[in-house]
Amino acid sequence: MTECAQDHQSKMFTILSIIVFVICAALLVAVVDIPPVLDYPNHYARIWLLSGGIGEAPLSSIYELDWSRTSTNIGIDLIAWKLGPVLGAVAIAKSALFLAIVMPPLGAALLNRYLLGAWHPWQVAIFFFAWCATMIGGFMNFQIGIGLALLFAIADACLHKRTWVLQFGWRVCATTILYYDHAFAAAFFLLVVVALEFSARFTPFQDRHAFWNFCRRAMMATMAWGAALIAIACLQEGKGTVPGEDFHAMWNDRMVSQVWNLLSAIWSYTLIVDVLFLIGLLVVQSILRKNGYRLHAGLLIATALLVVLSIASPRSAFGTGWISWRFPIMAALAATAMFLPSHLQRRSPSIVLCLIIVMTVFGRFAWISYNWVAYQPTVAHVRDLLVQIPPGSAVLQVGHVFKERSSQAPAFERMSWYDDTYRHLATLAVPIARSFVPTVFTAKGKQPLMVTPHWRSIDVPEDNLISTSTLICIPPEKFEGGYRNYLADWRNRFDYVLLLNADQPDKIAGMDLIGGLDLVDGSGFAQLYRVDRGWRADIGDLRPAYCDAAEPWQ
Image 1 (cartoon, rainbow, N blue to C red):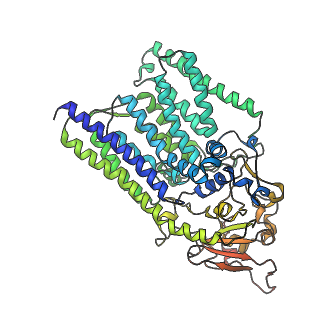
Image 2 (image 1 turned 180 degrees about the horizontal axis):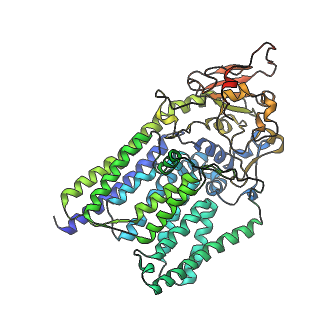
Image 3 (image 1 turned 120 degrees about the horizontal axis):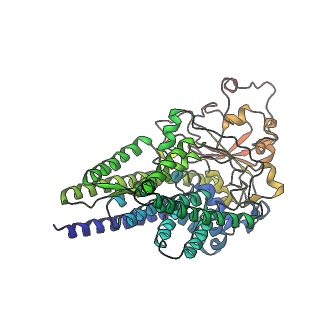
């Protein structure tokens, strides 16, 4: 086989494989109702409100919008607000989920195609990173933003020979769009642009003229980026910030947590499965390295910087979680884009390589798809319970919080580390039952959605799934004035309690039930209870011993 014919086959394999992956992702998103993606139900509830649901009674008296509260992390919110009334909330939410899956690897693959100057099977292998902690966590604006940042960086490189005025204007516009979508995306765009300006080789470190030329170009890129942020700040006039938020940092201060932190680039539901597929990717790269390769110097430096930021950043700070877990996937995308393999010179290695790539990328896709489809009976069960709630009710979500991952629990109920993927299912009560749920995202600086003053005392900007032991062991008055003020006097404030993970014991309270709740319906995973506001604990009731033996999860 001639070299030209083999290159043509590699090109066709790459293009067709990427098209097939994109189509499969679209079909998966279309078929699945609510996937086991951590924040997705919460985002869907907000998208439904922004798409017109907020104007329906009784929700019109519960939720309201204030766009001055934030200027970033609102890409999907803006689209839902403008197009939701026409397209519908389901179409907007599913489109966002689809883009969150395909945009990051597609951006990295196309950047690799641009730098390599040809299609190559390696670009299919990059789609291994479609699944990571931030994707399974449901960080859709972030996922879409970093993918868009890579695509914008390619467009920026194509404008390299145009006038500086045109390129400056483009960079201001691109940064503005990315910042409104997500601040991390805007920063990633600048980093990739500067990396491409550095050049494919380490010439700026070897030649003084090349070094000063790079500094000039990097300064121009930074000035355009800064100009966009200054313009946004002027438009906001200081709004959209969180002035009272303290640092409150949590660090990855142990070796184990750092390993988990770096592995967040590949997390899905079961780490051992993720690692097995990762081995396939490493085999692919090993074959390509033996065949010959080069690394893009600028992106190599950018990757190293992102790894350092992954290690040095707090896991959470300023009321924002998963900070350090965002850098590993950005590092992985930059690393895959920087790897520029030579064209395959023999047919035999090419066939083996393509087979391994297909098994790795589409095998992992099949694993994710299996978990998403297997999760649907759980979603249907919760839906059946929520339709029984009268409109205008206040619904409190609690759960049996796990002590450690149960071997009997389905993989889709947990992310690879510890986070439960079902924690926000109760927020579906907003679109399904037209009811209030306190954990719908309403954080100032992050979402334009907020609750009306009448409901504000039982709202929380964002919260995790609280344990049944929290309500059993902690007197309601203890929550008064704290972050979880919405739990103070919860018996008189909420009408219904939705218990999740009810078929598994809580890490502290076991299978003990909260007093004063009447079962409405449900068995197995989810149970719906009506709050008996006339219930009072008997004077002779003893506080369970486990309340003193372990601190309930607060």
